[in-house]
Image (cartoon, rainbow, N blue to C red; front, side, top):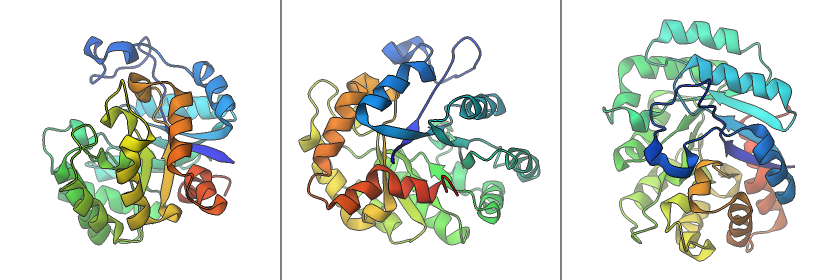
Length: 279
């Protein structure tokens, strides 16, 4: 089954998203499952991983409710207060009762401290995830965020990590370093994975094609291999640079040189194993 490993919903009437302001343009509105279901179907995507859009219990509980209501929601990456380990432990115990609760993310890129994720309390919180067999999605936007990935892999043994959006490579300006070296360093750790997602919004939103993304995706394939890479549509954020059909088409073009087995890994197999979908 093809699986989209990175999908969001939000409701401006019932949820609170401080990062989502009118300046966000066309994504400053409510996005619901009904809107994306036909787009997933047209692409042949049978399941999706919902990923938190806000550091709140409210957002996580909304996603779990959607997982109950829609079969295509295969897993939920929610939020717990990792910097408050005692509270996080109680939240994890509560969420563990839901069969589709599959991981945790924190919007580290919105924190004014770029070193938030390596403070002692957060390391302790991440240790709770490792003990529970739950992975952590890393929103690496700054080089500093990506530098922390191997640090986390070393300080929290057994914690599975996935780098969202390939850490937003500098596609638009045609840059390469330090992104390439930092990604390769993170990939040296076998419990570190990455998502081929959100790439179109890192490129020129009006003209991007697979060719603009190819050097960056090829590098990720080289250092991670398809067994540690997973496709994510990053809907609806990706609509800032095209529709879901274009994201799916250009991703297919990027993977065309792979064997069918390797394409199947990137387009679903890796995500199913990483998030333990159907386990």
